[in-house]
Length: 458
Image (cartoon, rainbow, N blue to C red; front, side):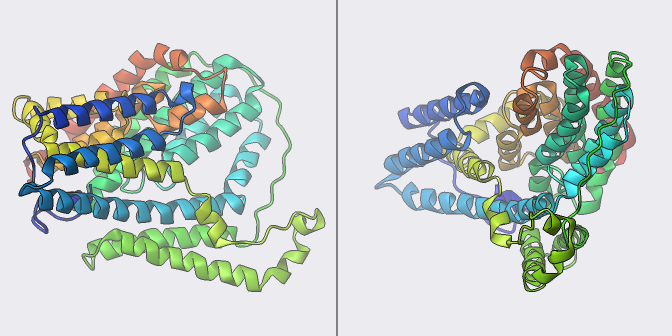
């Protein structure tokens, strides 16, 4: 995918072998299909999603190496594999820096304080439905949609009082809002991050998707609103104190984002360098918190005996390693299938035989069943000829298409576990037609208001 992370022409494209109709090619496709079935069944098997794709990646490239041994393609296979590893390293380090900041803010109780404030206010169910939805929409462009969804779901569970109808509808709304919010920001979702790092859409152009993303959230939310019970739950008193340095860490995260954008837009360097520079900001601030730990003696936590020293490496260790290793497996699996020639076939079928708009809409529907990460990676690896408007369209559809099913996004899968018994696959499925209306409306709004971008080459 990282070949996508550099501007076109900056490096030679990896070689492609015409092995799709060979035993090795068919075996590799079967291995990937079996691995992805296990990924899709994670909710039922409780097998971490990184395990099958990592194993599949090794098997696929082992098959390629076996087939290429002793031929002129042996060197090309090695180069293609190194190319994919470079792509993964850039994405992994970028995400690791972002995840470390999110974990630091969680440890400093930033999100707990927000949750406690919402719980204290005593909002009615309908008010809380809209409030958690809007917060999910506007927090996910900065934090990841998984963290945002879990935070908002904790609020819903705290005040829902076991009201399954309210909790299930609020969770559906949170999933749709978190996915929609992530679609208009380069930092909001892995798919937008991949498109930005490829260099075909600049940082500010992504915000042209703000209104389509907002429509994607508002249309189903407005229809679900009438199904929310008219109940006013009692306020729950809960006091949460921010730990020392919490607000400054938020400021450092904003500065880190600005650094990454500046490295990419002004210095024409990979944004991951800016993110790792920003991680150094947090490391130095963590050292400051350590050498000034005596200031914590007068904190509310000290009086309760709950002072927790800040350790940056604990925050790195708590990153979503299953997710990061899942990306490793996805990048190498899709890269291997691309080397075998499958992506060239898919590109010809979708982007030459179909209308490009229909193909991009289909990508979003597919991402509801297959995770949007490999789908978007495959599209970018195909490098179909598209205008900036079409690039934005596939970014939008891949980002919000996962909302059509509860298993279509990390946010949906996580909430099925957090709100077990209240938010389920079939309760979400019952509202899929309504969510599909929002999906269609967002596409139409994009085609309408961003028409000028469809005339601009990438």
